[in-house]
Image (tube, rainbow, N blue to C red; front, side, top):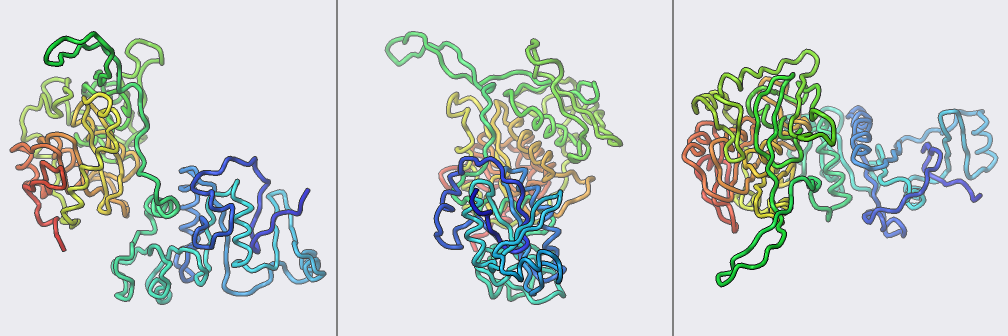
Length: 497
């Protein structure tokens, strides 16, 4: 066996795991190409700013996204790694270049090598087992940094350190000497911090897309007329349309004609738009009824409330004459349009975006329209934040179903919550809903319930859609294609400055 791997002082090394193939984004670790290219970040800030708290929440979030993370604690103050007179201190005094201490919980290896010299070697040796190293502290080191800042602890570090990627602060206002354009995140919004880190590590990686679901496309025979003759029959890709019955605690709430797949998100988004569901905290379970292989399995989904939560299905049953919602209309069966107007909340001001951001929103739909590329028979909806990051995207034969799926995705992630649910300090809030077709009343209504302030559609807007957008304070853009659009309401959210 070769000598054990060395590392920075105080780094705990676990039993080595079986080596895995390197991810393409990490191949550069094979050679020492400079500290700026290794996947390592420093979390810096004054003592008491909350660095440790952030890291203890950030590590499991990154682990849930498939990253194996190592954490190094760096101290600016010199202090002995072993108490004076201990066995390990005596070994170090005797000249050992590597000193170890083992307990049933693991092994700690220490060296006299400074962090700036030890880290490159650590990253190279750990390339097959570790995919990110986070260093707490080391504000003067060369690594890219996230600064955790609080008023009253000390002056901000970002003005004198251009390698700071973002500032994490809960303060209502930052000092004027912060660099202009520096991204500011709330330290409690761990998802947004993880997104920022992943974007820094893998800048060329496209936005996450929903997995391809083979149930959305089927094959049927077709004969084509080419203007002169009827061609022989051949198979063609066709979009699947099947019913989905949504039940709450055994009671049937609605049946919608949809594209199978992402039914949990669809049911969640539908119940949220109806005002039955306020947040993911209200959900106890979401599961298809029956058993796999049985006829009709997958076309009934049962929703159960969380302990102590109440899902008021009467909000739907008293407002609808029947239970069937077609794939073309999300409000069919309503007793009156006033039923919907009554539950749509008024949207707060902002954000203010450049018109190009709205024009580009519908262009992002092309990236997610996988089934449309095969069938030409489905719609798409996507939600983006104010910086243009894709938060959710789905396809469906119904326009309103596609919107329900993206809203349901955000509800299940905790990003979208109803007016009666406690608000969370999330940074990546939905800003733009892009839809591939006509913007009808129900599209605006669902966006308003999800507090999405801007809706952009590839096709036309209806009169009721414009009226509701005006009433709720929403920005509504239609015919958004080829870098152009018509804006009907909410012009105050668009600025060319």
